[in-house]
Image (cartoon, rainbow, N blue to C red; front, top):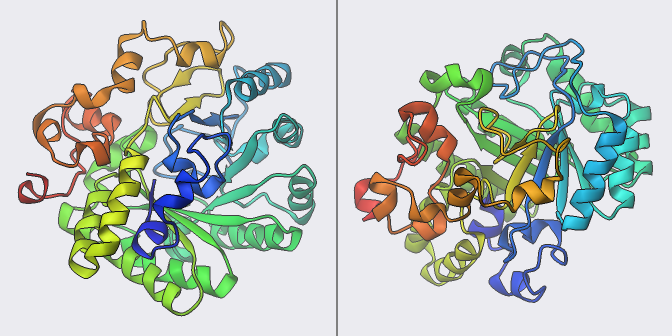
Length: 392
């Protein structure tokens, strides 16, 4: 994650992270990306079932029951292990996690075990009763996916009415007093909707948005041709920075992040270097703390059937199953060659990544995207839009 609002608009300083000791267990959520120990944020895909048909779904989710999902008892064992391991955040995802009948019990148990539990959802199933139930168990955050205004969003989500149902879910969360944010996956069909997303933040009083770069996994594997060009990506990142700054100057600051393309970090720094060199130096210090992409180190994934992956886009490679041994044991087992290399991946990247002056900032970007396009997990990420001159 690249905190556009934190880095570009100066809402977080290096001392903010340092004064907590930079241990993930003691950091507030907005500073976790700067932790030193990099205990993994874990995405748990609690179900593969979903009521929508999103064209970019990495899980190939469908609206049907799947027999191989972890049981409630197994889920509680997972939570026990993650809490003891010191995982700072457990993100319940899917499919659509609210289709799992025991989701309130599971998220509530995670909160009681001391985990920061959050839910990533399409928002269409958040009734008033569901929102208050989530509030009652102490859920800290709900991220709701909206990929444009009504026409674009519903086309992208595959179900008519999804947009208005998501807005109703947002409203219900706000009534219940739950912090809610937006999740937006950028592609060439909806990049023009970015200004309207900022309008939505302002009009509805939504405090946070994450803009996700497209990752070629699951149903998203067929969307390589629908990703932005490098120049288009630069333009949309510039636009996100401009609109973030505009809201900040209006006295309506929002937390704005970009996700899944760590070239955004150096790109932001190079822009800031022209505009405010003194601020740029402090930003560079924060970026070094962030360390860029952390798949297999600072983020991990547990699938609905218990397989452990480097992140939610690596379903084609499993390090083991929690039915056989705990996540904490699997995660620290460096006998798996891929796990070992991901823990030190800057040593293994190839091509322009290997000689890039931003390697310590970017961390080699997204390995799974490189593999999807080239067949080589250590090849340069094709979505890196920095020029040869900018990285030399």
